Image (cartoon, rainbow, N blue to C red; front, side, top):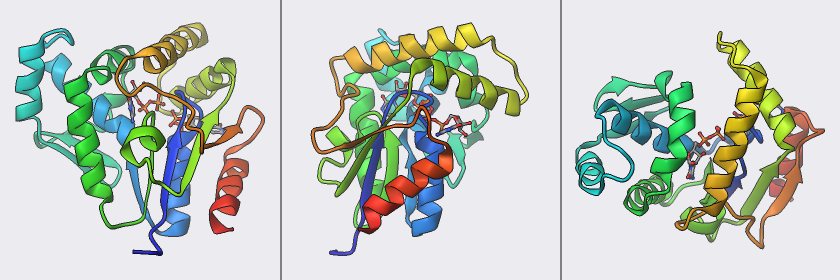
Length: 217
Ligand code: CDP
Ligand code: CDP
């Protein structure tokens, strides 16, 4: 048990969490879990079934019927591969509303803890250091200015073959940050024992090296 390493990576949208966590997982040969993809997949399922975030009964039905599978880079909802769809703009715009629901969070947190049981993991999200892995030995909070994060997301979209105006991305990112930071249940916070990394002027390799150095010490 002693040599289990748990690494929690939290931070706002576009701060580089998933890119960095994926590389570190490979380098350290530990499990990577992208918890944001789980909230995105639930949002996809809710929108597809026309269930609004304030429909308590509908949300409970969805929670009872969803079969969520994360398989390496792919995400499946009730056997449908939704890996691409969960990155679409309608998910970006709605995910924070569904992620604010207590029952949704309880279910996702339980799955995340189950996956991490007894093994070394690196997880990225909003509540990893505060709720999912409060005893993680290593906690990082990645940040960057909202302009830099919007620029990164803009370029990431271009790489994925779609162009969304920079101003729209900036507005959506700032709104999502606000919702994630101010919700009642498990908001995005900076844990007292987290190392804050302002990545505004750092490239991916710099951030990876910084975290690996801390973890290997
Ligand atoms: O990649 P990006 O940072 O844009 O978002 P994400 O990590 O895929 O997360 C999408 C959304 O899911 C966030 O804006 C949060 O509303 C929610 N989320 C959460 O509430 N808790 C987590 N542990 C992870 C994501
Ligand atoms: O997971 P999160 O939303 O925090 O961010 P991400 O999806 O890992 O990163 C968003 C985009 O920014 C990706 O295209 C990364 O390659 C890029 N990025 C960067 O250019 N410089 C960094 N220091 C971190 C990420």
